[in-house]
Length: 266
Image 1 (cartoon, helix red, strand yellow):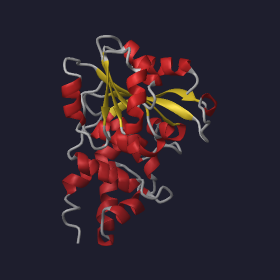
Image 2 (cartoon, one colour):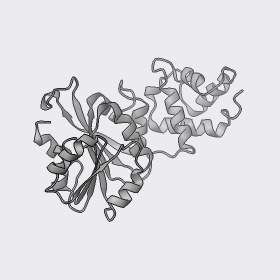
Image 3 (cartoon, one colour):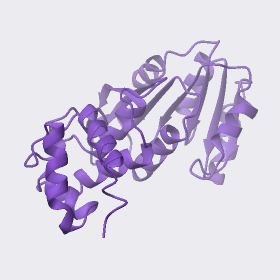
Image 4 (cartoon, one colour):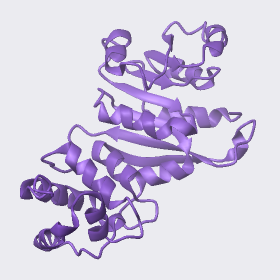
C-alpha cells in the first residue's frame, strides 16, 4: 500500500491507545504493524511466511512493544496466544489486511471462538465487506451477513480503491469494522441449529424459503408440517431467504427445534 493515510485510518477505526493491545494477522513487510506499534500498548503479529520474518525483524526493531509470531492463524490456539502474549490487556482488537482467499475462514474463526476481543478491523475485498454489512432484502445479504451480525455490529468504515496498491489488484477493497457483541441480538435455543437453518435458507437464492427448507432439512413427506409451522410464525413460505431478518431466522430455528420435526424425519 502506498497511501499511509489509509493505514492511519485503519488504526483509528480500531480505537487503539496505549492501554489497549492489537493482534495483527499477516503483517507482510510491516507497514501496518509500524502504525499499530505507535498506537497500541502492545502488538502481536502472526505471520505464516517464514521468508518475511527477517524483514519484519529489521522493520520492527525500533518497536519494543511489537512481537512477531510465526504460524498459521487458522491452526493456532488464539485464545491461548492472547492469554500468553497479551496478558494484562482487557481490550484487544484484531487489525489486519487479510488475504482475500482466506478472509471468510479467518473471520469466522475469530467470531465463532468468542475470543475476548473489542473490535475486528480488517481490510478485505469490497464485495465481501458489502456482504458482511448487508441488510435484509438486499442482493448482498446472505448467510455470511447473518453470521457476522449475530456476533458483532458491522459497518464498512471506508472503501479503499485499487489505485493505492502496487501492484494494483483487480478489485477494490474496503475496511470492515466489527464491534463484538457481549450478547447476540437474538435468543436461540440451539446455536448450531440456528446456523444450519440459515445456511439451508440461502442454499439456492432463487428458490423459495419452503423449497430450500425442504431440500436442506426435511423429507418431502413433512411438507405439510413445515407449511403449518411457517403459518404459525406468520412467515410466508413463498418468501426467499434474503428477505428474513435475523430475528425471523431465530424464531424459525427455535420453532423447528421445539417441533421435533428434525428428529422425526423419515
